Length: 198
Image 1 (cartoon, helix red, strand yellow):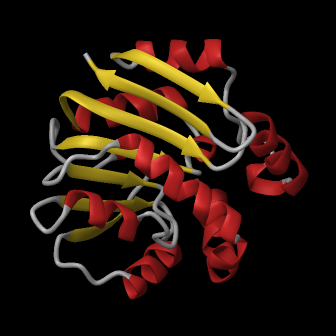
Image 2 (image 1 turned 120 degrees about the vertical axis):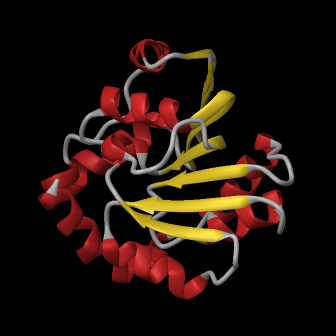
């Protein structure tokens, strides 16, 4: 875990430069597909430097609640510097041990973070715990599964083995964590897995 935190702390200063205009455009398209309700309580897991926070804030409105969670304190610091909304809280923690009460959130979203969860079964169990009954989990990327996996392999180091599982393994992981109504869409421009707490 310390190696992973160190990797992302060091990467934080250049993280925003990695988001191209094409990436931002694809992210906006994904957000439109999610239909997040105004007033929702949302957990942004692996928030990084907060690229999703303005989009999530627009979706939930002033009556909603956002919690930005990341294992990297430097990522969170930069996210906080860019986003000053009153209804956003910042929390440094590992997704495998979320220090929040159960059944708190309507939605948990993992944008470009799921491959980096060291213990995916434990992480999904924790996410399910903090979701309300019927709450939704979104796992998304602005590239295909194959592209993301190849990128991580090429980077090496702490993220070399950080992969998006194939559809069968992903379905098993989600269902084992108590999630159902699973939908996985993998295209050249995006990866989107959706599931609901049963």
